[in-house]
Structure formats: C-alpha cells, structure tokens
Length: 376
Image (cartoon, rainbow, N blue to C red; front, side):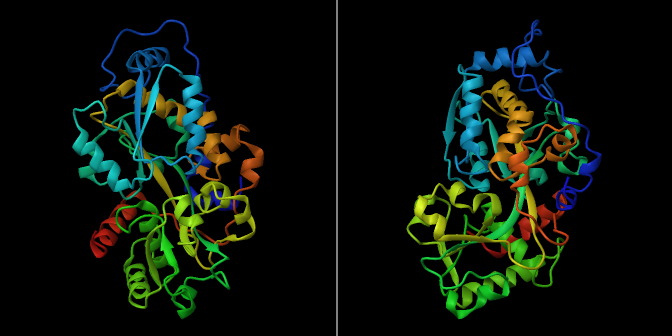
C-alpha cells in the first residue's frame, strides 16, 4: 500500500480484510420481511432473501450517475448482467448532489423516486441524513470507521484529488499552481464541473483553493475569496462543464475537477484529444475527498436499493471503481487481501506531500459556508 493512500484514508491500515460478497443466491432464503426497515442483509433473512425480494420488485432507480463518472457505466451494466430481472431507471444522469436530495424530497411516495444516492461528503447534515435509511453492507468492517456513519445512514464509496484539466487547443500554457489561475492570460478560462454549493466537485474546487491559499480543512474563507477574485477579474468561466459535449466544444479551457474524472477516457472524448488535453495535479497541498452512498428512507424499491449497495461494496464493485481511476473506500482492505486490480492500482496518480482529507463534520461545515457564499 502506498504512503499516499494511507494518508488519503486515515485509519485505513486497520481496516479488516474485505470479504467477497456472494453474488449468487444461496440455498434457503429467509422469511418475507419489510426490506425498507432492514439494516443489513442478515437482518432481512440473508443475502438470498435480499436477492429474491429485489428480483420480485424488478426495478431500481438511480440518479446522477454519468457513465463516465468513476466507471459507473460499467457498474450499471455489470449489475444488469448479474440481475437481469431488475430494470434500472437512470434519473437525471448529469444532476448534482443537490438535485439528488431534491428528487428524494419531491418524489416521496412515487414509484419514480430515487432508491439510492451518490452525493458529496458535505451532504451529510442531520436534515439530509434524516432522509436516509440505515443499512450496513456485508463488507461493513472493511470501511474505515471515519468513512461511515455509525448507524449506517451513509458510507463513503470512492474518492480522488482535485486536478486541472487543460484544453491545449485553447491554452498556450497549462497552469500548475493555484496562483496562476489569476493570471490575465486565463480570462474566462477557469471552469468547474457543476455549480458551487450545489455540485460536490465544484464545491470541492473552492475547498481545495482554500487549503492552498492560507486556509485549512476547518477554514474555507480563503477559497471563497479566491473564487470571488476569479469572478471579479473575469477569469471564472460560467459554463457548467459537466458533460463531454461541452468539453469537446472547447468551452472549458481549464477544468478544475477530480483527477479520476478529468482524463480523456473518463470524459469519453475523441481520440484526437489525447494530444490536446492535459491533466496536472497542481503544486501545493493536494486536496482529496470521498463521495457518499445512501439509501432513501422512502425508496420505492428498498430491496433492490440494498442489493445495489451490496454489489458496489463487493470485491467486484470496488474494483470497477478502481478501474475507472477512482480510489474505492475498501481499497486498503482489498490490497491487504490481495484482491485489488493490480494494473488499475499501479495507474493511480501519485500525490506528493500530505494531502488534506476533510472529516465529515469539516466537509459539512465547509459545504454550508461555501453554498451560502455562492447562492444559486
């Protein structure tokens, strides 16, 4: 295990060896149960009972999962092959974390509402987690204690570091420091994936700017000041760079985004971009963060929702994220057990120094302050 990753996930070295979730139905399913109340597969009668009920429901609603995001296209297609009787409806693939929470609130009681969400760490405030159902996957012990809610209301899934993606058909020089983003030569060039305060990636960009301009995990004001300065001097581009189509049209000259989302392959850009698109980890302090999985308390397909989480946290599901360039939360345990994808692991970007990885409470506080500073 690399030193960089030990720092990315504090306490990860103590994680238990990951258990491989059986993806076939074992004999002897348990009695019928109310899966909306089940806090684990065992509590609901066993994994076999979970699979049987999920197939009976026959549907799963996911939201805001672009296929190029952390290899979600493969996650979805693999789940469909494993459980062909479960139809997946993909809601608003380009939506933000805020859109996901809104969809749960507005869709309550409807069969079209999201069953599960994948949101930024800052979306774990008490008012939001009140919308989630407690559930612990079978590999719960492989998730570090500081990467999950003790009751199972949410749990980290995958993470990475903030990087700069540069369209070299537009730029003469790709910046390598945060300070360079203020240079007049980058007028209207600095862009984000989503809206600050709504999209986790855009909010994280402000957070990363803070820790590189005198701030810290507990002080994001310097990042707010930094982006206000970019806005004032005209360097901040208002384009929402959340799709390959926008990037391909050269509307996002400098795209601040997670490293696993900022590559040519992740964006699904044409082959010609291999020589036109450059990704750099800016000098200074690396900023890392994890996204969060949660099951809606009012999920219209509660068993399918829980089966989806079991799949994502199985060895197979975790390695699919790894193959997409993201760092799955169970990676330390996978490495310890020798069950990680060796090639994908070796390809992860190397990060110098000690990265900043906010705690859940720090991320929540920072997200609230950043959102208030940049109202929609």
